[in-house]
Amino acid sequence: MENVIEIQHLSKSFGANEVLKDINFSVKKGEVVCIIGSSGSGKSTLLRCINLLERPSGGKILYNGENILDEKHDIFKYRTKLGMVFQQFNLFENHNALSNCVVGQMKVLGRSREEAEEVALKFLKVVGMEQYINARPKQLSGGQKQRVAIARALSMEPDVMLFDEPTSALDPEMVGEVLKVMKELAQSGLTMLIVTHEMGFAKEVSDRVVFMDKGVIAEEGPPEQIFNNPKEERTREFLKRVLNQM
View (cartoon, rainbow, N blue to C red):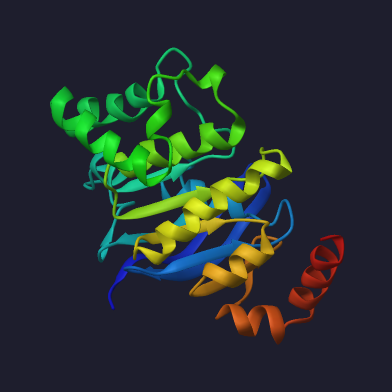
């Protein structure tokens, strides 16, 4: 299977602080990759570099074989191919759930309202939010907001879905409903790159797990290898620490 995204020698510094150092990895079409690691290991920065919310300091990001950091590349067009789900939902407070999923399609993809609403309804149904289409964000629970945010990203029909710790801002009882939706998406063959601290979820849904530590990829492999038989001492230490807390 071909790589949808390939990262080569990627680095990112904020001033003198080097947050990402020589990152190399790829995501194949239909693959579910989970990125794990301690806070401050560079996971979210890597995701933000991939969708160019942060400009990398060096290296290449290849999307379908083309380096999107080349001057000639249309960043705007590239961004429409990536769906992004944030920790904090980032919904438009003055729009209802349906409208939140329609606005971007009309503005960015040039769809008519009718077409955009049809697509939005399809994905609100996928995430189990079709009965809340007229609710505004302030009327929804955290888990419901995050499901609307997922539907909004899906409505753009992206090639790759990026999730940045999508459950970290949720109350514990709401985490399950969001993870359930994500599991179903993973099973549907969607290409997904997920930064998560939910180890059980990572173990269950990933095709591959990437462990980051201090700005580098310390280890990567199938979930059974990473969780049951990690090669690196720092992977073992991290897992021991997080799994003991659970």
